[in-house]
Length: 608
Image 1 (cartoon, rainbow, N blue to C red):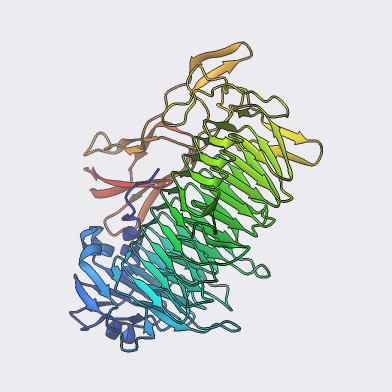
Image 2: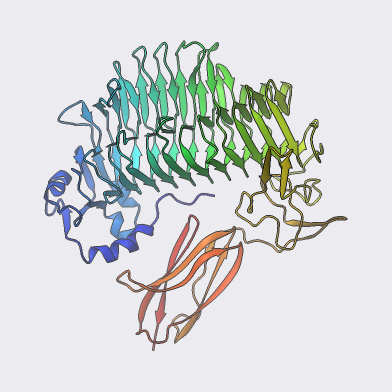
């Protein structure tokens, strides 16, 4: 699912922009990055920083400028490692964030290609709130930013007196609707520590309290150490939070959120002391798609509650979509654990489709706990989760669950290995549930899954799903048009929908399984054009391992687009494109394929 988090996608865009902007160089023109920012023209200039370690705490000062390492012009990731902004020597210890966006910036303010480290956070007092120390690496306040291709690592926010938020980054657009774009970054080994009573800790890696796009980041090994006695700790990796009266939109896509942890010593009563080992989404709407959430952990006092080792969802509307994720091997290691995989709480009603929930563990609800709300669970594969009670799904509160086209198998518990219904209702249709369940067209046979969670040719789940189902006129659930891998569902030549997150590569007729479908490429690839050199036409071949929106462009060496050969969604498969370059001059050109998270470019030579 994931490629290298650092891409050269931004480089071509820069080429054209650089032709019109003034470029300021550090340390050639200015000894420090802040000196260059102070001299830069708002909305116009670009700052390029040579390799080195810069002990600074930089402030964008509201300017729409671009600040980048030499990675910006070369695409060589070594410059990300070698260009370090170290914020460990702030002039004011209460302003210890490494990078500040605090003067109304938006996504035209860009930082790209740095290692951002050594930050200790900034004391801020939001209207109506007590002081907090926030944003170890980056702090956005009532402002937006575009933060791309950086390593935000080893920042520490530690306070004996205040709440702490955002070990790597805190974005708090309290009174604004600013957007933060966080893309292609590594956010790792950041830490929040709180020792004061009655203080909270939120977002070991990232705290986002507003609108944002969080795409293709590695968020890993961030942690919260919470020693307060009567408060809570949320989200070892990523926390997306907005007030219930002011919902904000978040798009969280194609991230790897792994090995984050929350360790709380709180003795809080009647609530969770630790939640969201990987991620929390509280009060926000939008989408959480194509992410990996794995090996995250929660630790609490042995008699206290911890919930959602993988994902904690709270106060979420029905406009929140949880789709195409793999949520695996998350665990509540100590405490009264609720939901190893996903905890959906407090009247949340997200649509949960095409997910693989595998190998998670907790006391209650190894895979899911759903407490309150009306939740659609469609085409999910929930397997091999463990709990003392409710191995697959635990349902409680006033919840109503609509379960369709889903597999629940291999889940283990002392009681209720598959589904535990404490309260509420579960309506099921066209599912494979170990131990069975009342409903329409329920089977209870081994789904026969491969190690990659696909259905083997002998699986009883092939062709046993349904395109849509009306649950007694209350709600109609619709099968998603693509599967976990983005491939069309059902197959174009197969009228039968499969059960589970992945469509089988085998066909089924009314009499049973028949021949194998046409093989799908294992990987995304872009081939060298042929012939090369060419005159006047050449062929470009590429392969898609899953359905994707594809763009295939040709550029000249100035980074200017010459022609767009493809800009449309295409199904998985092999493709050939012929390009006739009649009318162009001889020379070297670049062709570049973008398909989902796959980006690759190659050279071609037109020779008259």
